Length: 111
Image 1 (cartoon, rainbow, N blue to C red):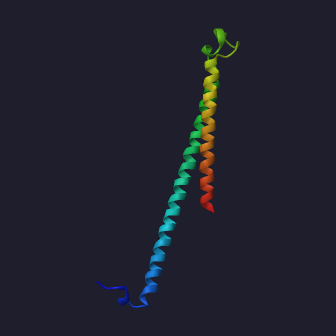
Image 2 (cartoon, rainbow, N blue to C red):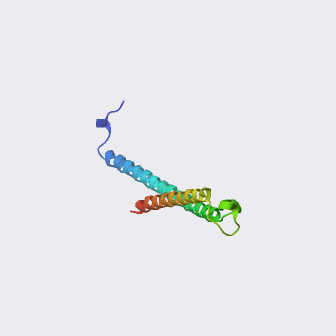
């Protein structure tokens, strides 16, 4: 086995430069991969928010069963209707929070 003393002194800076180049290339690839992953998360979160908003819009449309005494076009809404809309609003809020986190994470990678 050859010890470090056997390596010429002039070769050591090249080894360090090569190692630094490899480390920089790896860091660059990691950063590019992180940016790509963050971009995907933003897209997925935005799509989920849009779907949650569409479900909320659809869920707000009352049916005959959503009214107390089933009065068509009138009468108060049932508790089930209000619970459904509330749950859909919570889904929208969660999707918005996910998108906000994804956008913040993506923005942090630009710095």
